[in-house]
Image (tube, rainbow, N blue to C red):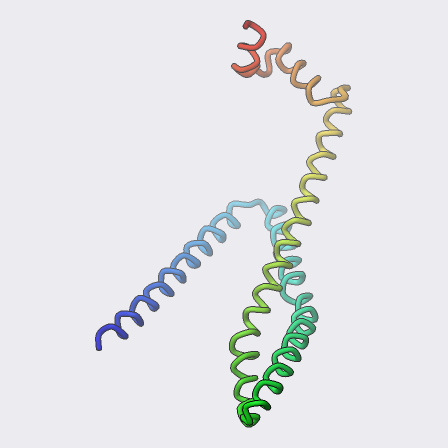
Length: 172
């Protein structure tokens, strides 16, 4: 008799721990948000709204199309198999269980996760391009054509020290 209660208790404990982790993440996020200057908060707010728009709202048509295709496949298979068993009255119950309860959330999660990854990748590409633009601008201002020239100039001016590996290579 205690085994089902223990299983239930472990499940509840996992959910509480997961919720606690999410709460800690939220507190850290809000704390970090508060340390940003006003311009940084505006940028973060804009990026978050873009992510919600891209991940959630724009995914709805894709989820509808994929769910429709999957529903058609499941229904056609169920009708054929249950027809052979003379159990066509079970088709409605099977569809509710298979599509709404099991496949719907799974399909939605897969779609949203894929779109989130795409959004993150797009954001990283933008960031890399932005950094490259800044590096090019700095090189132009200093009159250099490569990062190596900047590194050598910084060592000569005493603004930077060469790495120990480089010193060993030169001395050895």
